[in-house]
Amino acid sequence: MGPHPAVAAIRLAVRRVLHDVLTDLTDRPAGLATAPRGGTPAPAAGSPPLVLVACSGGADSMALASALAFEAPKLGIRAGGITVDHGLQVGSDLRAAEVVTRMTALRLDPVESVAVRVGRDGGPEAAARDARYAALDEAADRLGAAAVLLGHTRDDQAETVLLGLARGSGIRSLSGMAEVSGGPGRSHRYRRPFLQVDRQTARKACMVQSLPVWDDPHNIDPAYTRSRLRHEGLPALEKALGKGVVEALARTAQLSRDDADALDAWAAEAEAGVRDEDGRLECAKLYALPPAVRRRVLRRAVVAAGSPAGSLFARHIEEVDRLITGWRGQGAINLPGRVEAQRQGGRLVIRQG
Image (cartoon, rainbow, N blue to C red; front, side, top):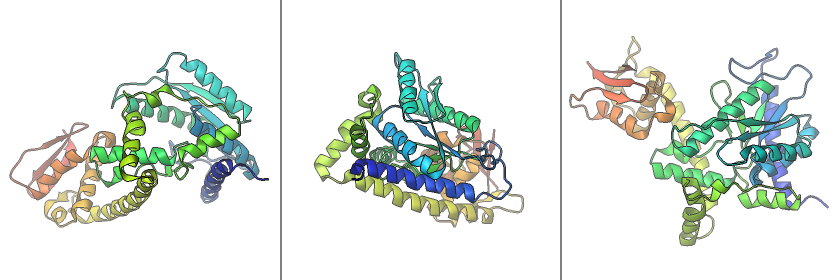
């Protein structure tokens, strides 16, 4: 008799991702000992690759940890785990130590707890996320991990799409979380095997395997936007529209991501054709582009000039776009990162002021 259907589902999802990790490692150029500067070192010749799971102790990440521990040895992969102590609750260090014990019991190795200091930029949720990813990046670099698995589920994806819709920040926000992501030099570091798995399946997998889980009180605290959306917003939508809202939102994320990727590629190709011989953006050529492509070209140029991508919103790009489409002699546009955009003699000049 095979495993419970919930356990089989999470193991299959992880197995597929681990195969992808091995394929990516195989496709690296022969003789490449390390990734580009700031990236993940390749395993030494003959040594098995290491894959880490980011585990908070909740049902989603514990289910992921158990599936990784089961599947990795069969593929010749070392499996380890990292838990991040955000220090936001009394006894968080003890909770992190418990998670380490649970991951060790699953025979993950290495296993670490990393304490972080959460700042204030962008609000509590964004600040905690930034601190967490910085800690995971540091651990992955130090340990030479080929990938870090994250336990985001289909339900998390649906919530992310709704949050993006509420911000009105465009199709990229509606794309939700990517199955594979990472920063510069780490573009394939983070893997999300459970984006097609619902939260209830992960919890059921923990229950039938007798895995203890911890329910973070922040997840039910109405002070947090995502918590309100999870416990009030989505249930209200399902009551009004019927079941299937979560699946539909997750499907929207994938369709939006495909469209956004295509438009980004178009903008990257178009950018060279709208610059003069000195590399300055020509307003007339920008005007001729479709609006969705033009705004992407502008965003790329603003980020390249030094504006932080995370602080750059749709309203900023709309103001720059008006220098092209609604020119009435207006002055320079001030952007995050002390970047200015100004129209001068038919050219768009974007630079740090």
